[in-house]
Image 1 (tube, rainbow, N blue to C red):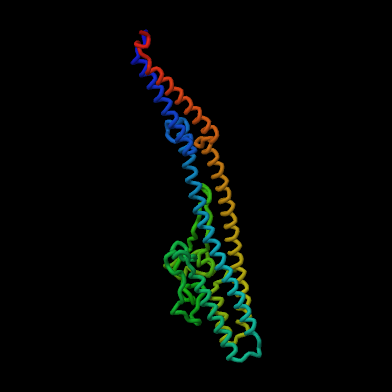
Image 2 (cartoon, rainbow, N blue to C red; image 1 turned 90 degrees about the vertical axis):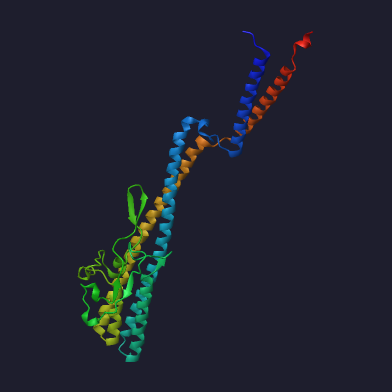
Length: 324
């Protein structure tokens, strides 16, 4: 078969196009440091790369959510520390009130100090982060606690929350966090559990709400201690002192539970971080280009392009007139 000059030019032109295209691909690889810039670069890697990126997105979501939850848990722990300080101060006040040498004016001062501690406890119970109340359960946009305007010490009934000195407007549902697929843990404490000593709450029927046996209603404990001091009842003050210690211990136990959950979240978060590193390494093997290999390939391809251009230039000068 005879190769005409036109055929030769087409072959050379096609070869130049191929070399130029390959050089552009290599330069793109060098610019992005990626050997997989388009699906056509490695069709068999597209599926694995897509799956890995999806897994990375899930890991990032887990890590971000757990980070925010840890911030909330740390803030909650700070408030629990303040609750314990309030209980400690209350115990000191009641202990001083048991001093028989105190007069009525002295006892009034101590009782007023307990009243101020109740206000502090109320402010802590209504703490919020980013506009969301910490101890309201799912009702995080509702102020969880309020003073009961109908409270009467003579009508107090431990089995009827409508007679208690403070009312709860949240619910008994703690916020949960998925730390791994299929594993969730509570990341906060409900107000009914922490301040009223009950893990259940029925907002529709106050007679169904009662402090669980062996647990304490912190607001009732402070209120009763204050009333005992004003009435100068040493027996009631002694009982109040014991209740205050029980309430403090209840707070410490719940704080320890929250600490254990925070440690679990930190462990899960560290595991997700390790998983992210592993996935990024796998993704790098599919996507990332070796800098030195890419630079060498670009140099070789540029040399090949110069050689092809040189040959094309020489061939284009050939003419039958050169042999006449």
